[in-house]
Amino acid sequence: MTDSSFVANPHDFSFCPKCGGGLEVREHDGVPRLQCGRCGFVFYQNPVPAVGAILLREGNVVLVRRKYEPRAGDWSLPAGFVEYGEHHKEALVREVKEETNLDIRIRQLFDVYTAMDDPRTHVIIILYLADIVGGELRAGDDAVEARFFPLDDLPANIAFSCHRYALEQVKQRLASGQLLPGS
Image (cartoon, rainbow, N blue to C red; front, side, top):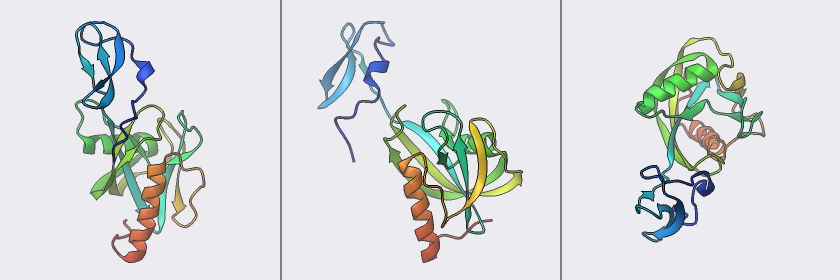
């Protein structure tokens, strides 16, 4: 699904990264995009890749309470952005360790979601099922709390819509037998 009216944070960028000229919103290929008035450079604002883990144990899932905005104090799956030059699976292992102190083994791809409710940017998040293989659950990095929640008693304040949707899908797939409960 494409929303052609969506331009991520157009006011955050004023100058061309190529020549320093001023950027203006112009229609390009039928989509409003930032373009340099001096050299013509088109500033494509592409989605940002993120990764997240679904960590299940005995009908419970690991969630972290966010320390920073956006949505500080709300709960989310352990997740974060992929750094430039980093493989997305390495990013997943790093993010889970930073936020939960857990060591994981990636089991399988769960799903990929488009997320446009993060005010910082348009996100493409890759969620994996993963097994806990070490570490002791505790909040770290940008989390103030990390804990297991029963899937049938999740907090109401899940930070992002794709996390809420994924958690509903986890429950449905477990109930239908399409998903094994994990370690």
